[in-house]
Image 1 (cartoon, helix red, strand yellow):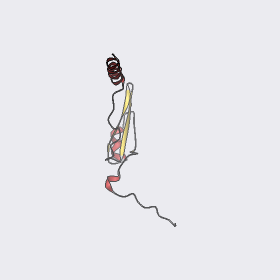
Image 2 (cartoon, helix red, strand yellow):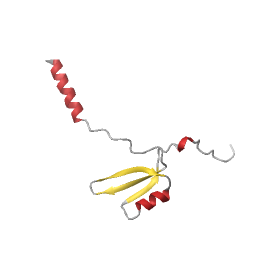
Image 3 (cartoon, one colour):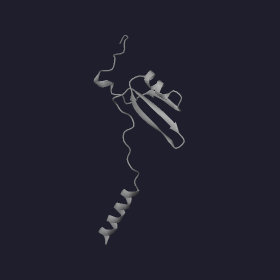
Image 4 (cartoon, one colour):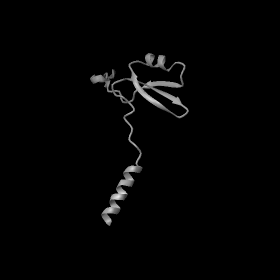
Length: 84
C-alpha cells in the first residue's frame, strides 16, 4: 500500500511541475532583441550587431541589448590598459 501511495505522489508531483524552457540566451550571438506583446513577450539572440537588431526592432514594441552570456566566439577578452 505504501508503494502505491508513493508512486501516486511521485506521478502527481512530476505532472504538476512546470515544463522546462529552453535556454533564452544564445551564447553565439552578441546582441539580443526583446519583443513585447499582450500575451507576453520573447527574447531572441540572433544578431551580430546592434544596428542589425535595431533594424529588425524598428516599428515594433521591442528593444535591443547586449547578450549577457555572449561567449566572445572563443576569443580572449581585451586586456584593460593602464598602470598596475
